[in-house]
Length: 136
Picture: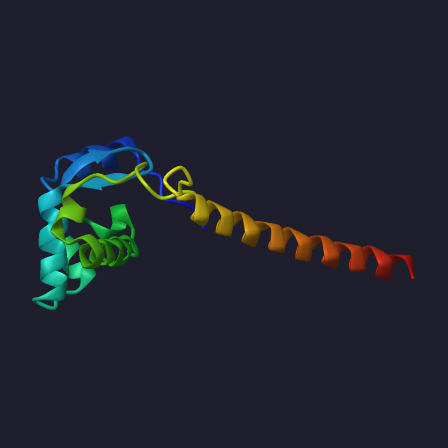
């Protein structure tokens, strides 16, 4: 799927909207207040995602017709997990990724390594059987 690229004119128009904090060729950053209000309107008042964005002054021709539902699904999930503070804090580039192992106790590290060794042994056995089958 091709990602929407905004023109300079579209970026200028998006930045004129009070609900946009930043905008680049590839992404729009929405204000914290807009995210919170959009989630409230969606969950409590039953407004549709497109309706919320259109009422906030966004043109679906510019942002894309699927953008509102994608944003609201993500924001509702964040709101369910972390509450409104999750919508107020910028989380891009923070968290996620591979879990840290530094904080694990020795017993937890040992258990993790035993699982890893068992996995690698099973993988080696599978590959050995595969090589043997190829030789036949």
